[in-house]
Length: 258
Image (tube, rainbow, N blue to C red; front, side, top):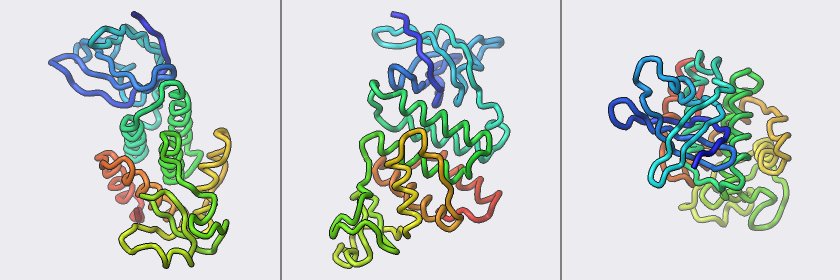
């Protein structure tokens, strides 16, 4: 059976001497793994289209045991991202995070759109990369079924407090009064009102508006701390690509605080 679908390459790994297994986030079939034959040979017709971050239309043969890529027509290589080592490391992390989540095939286009939009804004310098990171982290986990309850304090129901607390494992907000009743063994992270407002915007805005805001540097630092901890709490694994991004960013800016 031959299928055609648009998708972005999340990662690749070696199999044998000349072949690689390509992981693709597809528009129609969720995450697909398919073998690309002969990639290490000179003049391989699939070499460019199976690079991580390549967005293309793939023609895939679905076998009983293995899928294989017959052909691919490149639509976007995100070439400029590859010229910036910090942005590239962040882009790789976003792809790794996506690959680690079990996606519903019926809504895989939503994940694909989120990733493509984030990479496009990152490539074009349209937003602070740390803000894009936080938006992506919080939104993709929400799409995957881990949406936190940010409507109000989970205990007393108050909508706003000058300082609230986010409980990343429990995925809920607590106000400054109710936090005193929470056991010390439960992890809580301070979330000033600007941080809470940013998180609510990411979660509850329409998909085409989630990037339409900015925050101050101090707010962004705390937002990054919260969304990153939220990811690591629920995915229950670490990412070498995230460590690499933070290392590269710190070397360039000397102020990464998550």
